[in-house]
Image 1 (cartoon, rainbow, N blue to C red):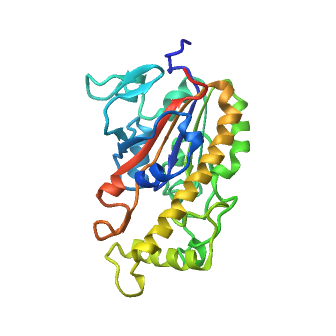
Image 2 (tube, rainbow, N blue to C red; image 1 turned 180 degrees about the horizontal axis):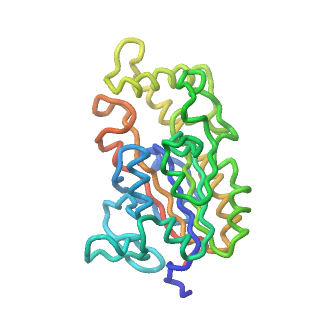
Length: 300
């Protein structure tokens, strides 16, 4: 394997669920910075299911600045299916079949995933995303549990995939080559982590934000969020990302000797009233514009 050949490397693919680009740009993320510069990209989906369906087919969020520099080469995309329409766009890794996971499994990799938002609850037969993996680990509340305030606005601590980096790394290291996917739920509402725990004010603001998400309408009455309120909530997501960065640093240190290809991006962002709505699942620049980092651990 040459310094620029990415086809036989192990892979770490991470989605920072719901993380806005501007939040990522304002956060202190030294471990992500080791992968390369933060890129502004456009997601093919506005919520978890379609964004990940595209991602698993090789369609990453596309950098608005043009080609990527990866493995000392300029490429238009990291992955491209051989079954896709003919194109002059150059991809670093061509693959056969409908999914990245199927491609790497066929090549003898250990393919495993971990997720924390309810679309990845593998015990729910309606969730097809975890079924695309031969091995999947879910850390989060049950998807069919009542979506009450008490169930949603909580300190999550160990109910976050990146709280289990040692376990995930050990599973990867049991194999000669691995494909590891992690859906990072810390940046998804309620944004709670050891760096962004609940306080009385946070709890009250998150309850109002959930009501706005649920209504998909404009703010009114007791649900109105002012500029300062929104800054507090964006600060919670920023600290959730910074916590994720520390945990990714631990994962990178455990797996760095394998010099894997690493791709970290958001599946979509969030709107905080900029266009009159809150949440995601609808087209708006703050929803479709996401952060993207990619590189090879240890360089090369």
